[in-house]
Image (cartoon, rainbow, N blue to C red):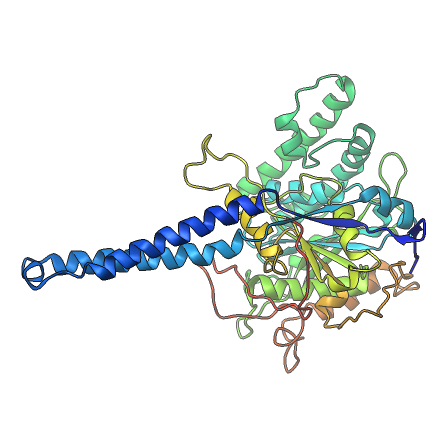
Length: 468
């Protein structure tokens, strides 16, 4: 790995800073703790008398004691989240100076499960936002896992693959932020883009109308089916819980007729996957989808870094990948880091956010506090992983990662051969009698929430950093 020194000294790709006002806050917390102890002491020193007990005051006293003990104990526990806040700052300019020509390939996983709850237009806005990252497009691959196996969602992906040929050059030319088309068009104020803006918005509106019409019909018209071979995979489709693997590589550099944008630059690889499902096999919800994506992507692109996002959370920062790489590629600390994650930001919350829907206390305070003690747990979305960490590799101080992208695993294979090889890895019986879902990759759990889409994961690496 390349060693870069400044005047003979190590120059890090990120820095860690302690939160301001720590001493003042700790004094404040100690004073609150002392006051709480005095309240407990008062309560125990003023035990009710026999006469007061006969008057029924016993239950009031017990209720007050229980509540004061519980809330005092809860407050003490929460101080661990505020006692040692740390903030991390990546240096993307240093990353570019050292590794601009040897940046690793990145695979991005987007998961969806129901086209009615998660409309296809929302899904493709997320897909387009990550396809438009400020990153070498030939090193970027985007995978959509559709657990509903919906031909409507597949149709939306086809439309997005064509719109991307115009959207990505537009984003690069005008440095658009955010790069989700819907979010951008809803927030734009500057009208100086004139003809270019009008043209791209017209293309988006036309695409949106076509997708919305198909979504309302809940089926793809026959004439559209005949235009793309991918729809033939639905001929044997029984139901969302009983179907073969449906996999289609929509964009790939090996496709000479469908791999470049309108400016002649290579587009990111784009793949649609609906893993095989059978009633007799448990599909393990999102964790099962992620494990299938990991196997399939190892054949098609095999990116050294993996980002997973939910389909309803578009990227609002086109340089997110480079932020994460500053942590992974740091010469001294990089081997200690298994994953880097960013908190979710929410739109359409009320002015004063009365119900805490924006989760500001968690993302801006508590995550930084947990980071001071090693980092928060994996939150399930907006997270960059090292593929090696997910696959169980253990690291030590002597380990030096080779970030240089490897050549294609199947140089001679055409797209059809690659698709067939990948389909086998997404079969529902592939994990039978293996350690998949038990000791390696995403671990399956029986604890489900109301939407039955939460999974518990296990990362082999025990030391990690989270980028709040």
